[in-house]
Each structure stands twice: as structure tokens, then as C-alpha cells.
Length: 499
Image (cartoon, rainbow, N blue to C red; front, side, top):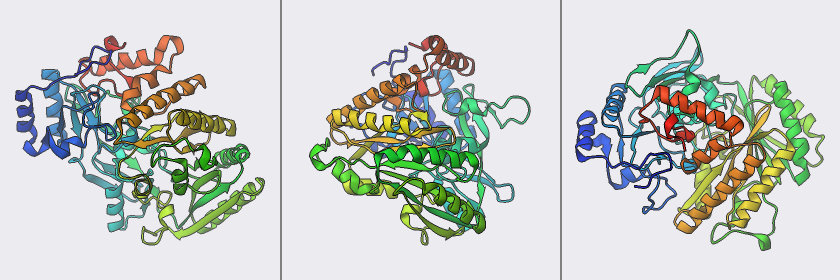
């Protein structure tokens, strides 16, 4: 199998090693072929792809089994690649950086270990999905409210460790983690810290250890919540719109993480798309405004009403801007909430994916571009124009979105393509590389990257002769000198292996 420029050639696991894994975990927990095994490749790469291909998938059911697999990897020198549910499709799914790695997948470690409604936290394993926890909270009538991403089929821990976002009050999922249990490369494990420096951050977006349990803070179930949109029709509205959102977030009037989506305004004659993937079709999925903000307000009815009044007053300064909010009781579930409000209401769902596949077909694919940007309208316009220009140059389409924090924005842009067409997959990869370089020119970088582009993403942090990457390498050398845990994840390699 091909190498990758870091001295890591793709591995081929000996038959005896596969048999040892079966003896450790059971035959059903070791996948080498078939449809179940194929799920752990990049879902948008064809079956003939040669890069980022797993060798074997193992699915432990306990921490002790994870430790056993890690010890065996250390003894025999094979690589592991950790995935929780493997649903991170826009960034490669469960595909490893180094081909032939053993994918250590946590779908069988899916226990909800503790729910503490009084303190407002849960303890879970990495195989617990947003949907599973939501259903459990509803079945037990636990007065806690979830924060969920756009698609609810993924792992809560996996999403949080990758700095994923939701949109509610606890929408910073990495920040909501409260204590990790971690298996280290030597096969030992450490529980959450409580004295001295906190080490939890070392295991987010890294490959220094394997998280097998985590605590998660949750918000109390509010009396009511109001979900809806702001719609602005003019391109220039983005300047005052972001100024307003930033101010209200900093003042504590707005809660959670509002999301702005830009709807392209080009006519069909200027449509750069190909086949089913056209701007005309994309616009049937998006809202009609040039800029559309999705947001939510949560809490006692009086506070929600006050927040809404302040928001409406601030929005009146933008001519033609429209605010549409729907109010629900805090106990409202999917049968009472409009589907367009599910995400901000904390209801895991697949509505977005179902709509995209309904418009573009079952072979719908995407790669995601997510640089961290200044919280300003000027930065938003620069992003929007760059994504549209690069997409057009490569015959692609994609919406431009931004998650608005108090002092920064995280872009949420997709390049969409027909995953059944290898030429379109390659075009998306090339276009994404070009966008990474544009972001680097702005002094920005993605907050997470496709497995094929991790080195390029980390390479943007070039200050002091790439001091950040070299520091990561020294940490990797200390925690995992043999480099067996997810080599190349987020561009992190043992010190001597960096290119």
C-alpha cells in the first residue's frame, strides 16, 4: 500500500494477528470484508480507492478489550485508527490517514452509564449516539435538554472530541465534556483528573490516547423555547447582521450558536453545476433570503419574551429584515415541533440528509470546509465569494454557512458532488485544497479537516518554523513513541516521523 511521506507505509496485517484479535474479541467483533466492513472506508471514495483504506475493523465491547487490543498493537507494531460511530462523512468517515490501519470502532461500547438530572450531567461511552441519548431522556422523562448537530446519527463523544458544534445553549460540545477516561498507548488507562493540571484537552483533536468514557454537561429543560429564523434579502445586510448577532451574544441576550446560511442569487444561466448538482436545485433546499439565520431562545417564558423583544428591536435597524419564531413548551418532542426546528430544539434527526438525497440522489457526496474566521461581515463576504469562485472553477456547488460565536465564526461550507463519479470526487478534493490555501492567506485555518488534508491543515500554523506541529510531535513521542495510535490524525506524528 502507498506510503505518505512520513515514513509510514500502509500495513498488511498477518493472518495470525487477525486470529489473535478474534480470540480477544470474538469473531463477530472483527470485520475483514463485506458490507459491514465497507462502512469504514471514506463513504465518498469508490471501492477501488487505494488511499486511506482500513485493513481490519475491530469493535471492542469493554475498556478491558480496548486495553487488550492496544497491548497487542504495541507488541506487534500495527497501527490503530479510532472511530466512534464513523459518521463524520464530510471529513472521511472512519477512513484512516495510513492505509491498512486497524480501525478501532466503538459502536458496541454504547452504554449510558449515569444520568444525573439534579447536577445536569450524564456519563456515557463513545458508542452512544445523539439519538440514543435523546430517546433515553424522553423515555425516562428526564428534565434535561440536549444540544445536537445537523445530523443526529453520530457519536456524542466522537463529535465533541473533534470540536463539533450544536446550536443550543450547550452548543460548544467540546466545552461540555466534563472528565474523560483514556486508554494510553501502553494499554493502561487514566480516569478524569481532579488535582493539578487538567489533561483533558490533550485528548481532543489528537491521537495521544483513546477516550473510552466521558462526562457531559447538559442544560436544564426550559419552560419554553422559541425557534426560528432571521431573513435578510440584500448581500450588504451581512455587515450589520453579524454586528448585531455578535453584540447580542456578548451581552447574553442571544443563546447558543446561531447559524447563518447564504443562499446563492445567481440565475440559472450562470449555474456552474453539472448533472443533478446545480445551484437551481440547491436553492430548493435553502431558504429564500440572501442570508438566513437559524437560532433559538430558551428559558422561563418571561425571559424568552424579553430576549425576543430585544432581538426584534435590534433587528429593526436592518431595513427589510424579517424575524420568524415559533414557541414551544420545553417538553415538546418531534411530534409537536416543526421538522425545520428540530435541530435548535435539540431533537436528533436526519432531515437535512434526507432532503439533500431527495434533491440530488442517493449518490450525494460532500466535503466540508470549516475555517475559523473573525466575527465580522467582511470576513463572511470574503468566505462566500471564495467558496463560490473555487466551486465554480471546478464545476461544483455548495452552500456557505457560518456558526456565530461571541468573538469568532466557524465556517460550515460544503462542496457537493456525485460520489458515484470518481472525476467529481477528485474535483472536490482539488477544490478543497485550493480553499485551504486561500484560508491560509487570510491567516485562518480549518478547525477540522478531511483525513487526506490533515497535514495541509496543520501546515498553516507555520509560526516559528512550525513550532505548533513540532510541539505536537514531542507530545506524541512522549505519549505514544511507537506511533501506534491513529498516526497522522490532525497532522500529528511522532517527532521523528514528521516530513
